[in-house]
Length: 217
Image 1 (tube, one colour):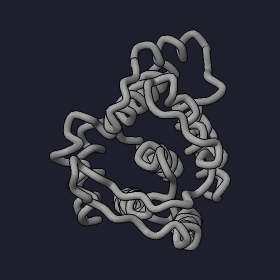
Image 2 (cartoon, rainbow, N blue to C red):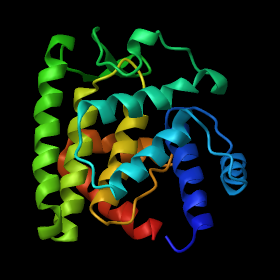
Image 3 (cartoon, rainbow, N blue to C red):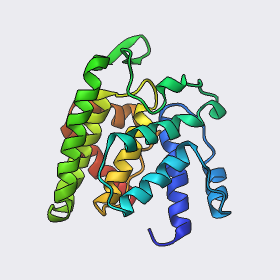
Image 4 (tube, rainbow, N blue to C red):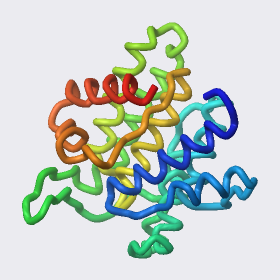
């Protein structure tokens, strides 16, 4: 990104679009104005993205703590946006209940049992760490494909009670920055026709990431 203001504009749009995918209304211009004025929030979705930006710059290896903090920050301000306030036990901790992804009255994704989540996430983190160690020796296109697969896998696990989509997209932002690939915007206007359909097949998710990279830059 060319200037600090370009980065503020990107973060404002990224957050507002990621929220909008979950039908959460966020004022992009208000976020941008606050960032330009140096008003950096101490919590919330914007803080989560900025924290991940800093972690990518430090070349930090992924760990549970980063994932927990990302989800906890993202859901911390959702009550102010008209969403439900989560039980503190569901903030920054893997879920202990069954959840399903539902569209209307139809279950479109049945997620792993809660007792399986820690093990599945440990395996996912291990593979991300392995990828991180080889990222500089890997071609950018191959890194992009792997990040798309990681995003697909994370959302299939759905590790939290709430904030899975937003935290998953935030972690994809972090991975792209870690790999020195321009981060993409997940847009809300095509979520049904494009983004949601990609959770049927990782190859479709790879195509989605490649297309978003082309159109975002």
